[in-house]
Amino acid sequence: MIVNGYEIKRGADLRGADLHGADMRGADLHGADMRGADLSGAGLRRASLRRADLHGAYLSGADLHGADLRGANLHRAYLHGANLRWANLRNVKMNWQSHTLLAEVLRRSAGENVQRRMLAGLVFISTDWCWKDLLRIRHKERRWALSVLAGYITDNDAHPSVLNKYVECA
Image (tube, rainbow, N blue to C red; front, top):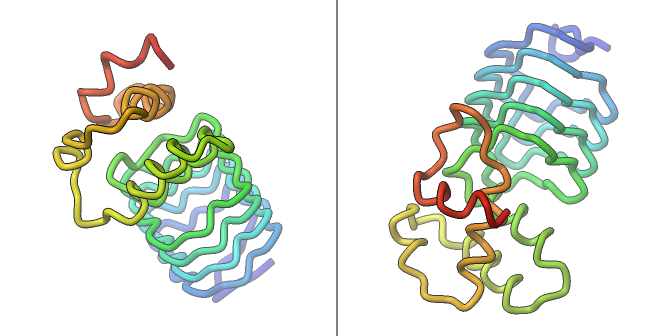
C-alpha cells in the first residue's frame, strides 16, 4: 500500500514521514521505524504496530482503535486525543508524560470500579498537571493506580522514580 508517497509495509522506514490524516486501517506496520512521523489524525484502526518504533511520533487525534501496539515504543510520542480503545498496549514502552496513555491504562485496569475510573478520568483531563501535581492527590485508589502504572515499567524508559516502590505490588 502506498500512502502519501510512502510504502506502508511491515518493517518500513517511515522516520519523519508526513502521514497526517492518512487512512492506514488494518495496515501491517509490524517493526516499522516511525520515529518522529506525523500521524496526527491518521486512521490506524486495527493496524499492526507491534514492535514499531513510534518514539517522538505525533499521533494527536489518531484512530488506534483495536490496533496491535504490543512492544511498541511510545516514548515521547504525542498521543493527545488519540483513540486507544481496544488497542493492545501490552509491553509498550510508555510515554510517562502522556495523560491519554496513562489514563487509558488505568481505565482498563479499573474495570467497573467507579472510584478507580474516576481517578483515571482525573488523570485524563488534568493535562496541565505534571507528575508532581498528580502525586499530591490524596485518593483512596492512589496506591492502586501507581501499582498499575508500575507494571508498565521497562528498562531505560525514564519512568518516574516514585513508581519503583510500587513494582512489587504490580
